[in-house]
Image (cartoon, rainbow, N blue to C red; front, side, top):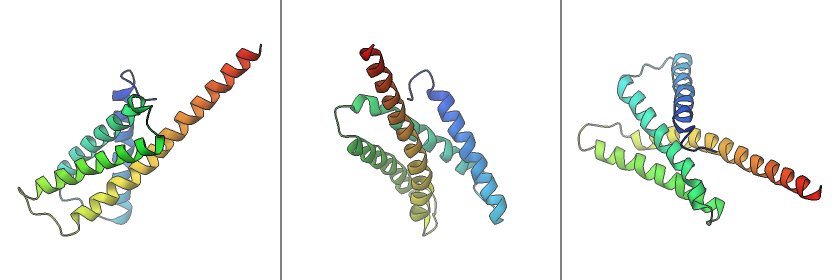
Length: 137
């Protein structure tokens, strides 16, 4: 569970893994990133936003989990696409920029949020089993 004690280590760890993955994939595919610094900053901002949104689920415990996950994803993608729209007023963007950004955010977010929620529910199940075992004694 992401809380104020492990928030920054989580952001840093996820950012590092995503950055290493970005560099490795670019090296394998032979792609040269012309906007390297801007993309690294965008990666950090999106990682921060996604981690912050995932950490908010404990405040939304009265809502169905699927709705919480969809809301978190919607807010993240709304922020990303809003930033993309804002960016079009200051610079030229490739015609496929929104599509590329959609997939570049969606794939890692779904994978990492899936891991987060699976481990979260696994920990809850484990805690409930321990509680039940203690109550039977």
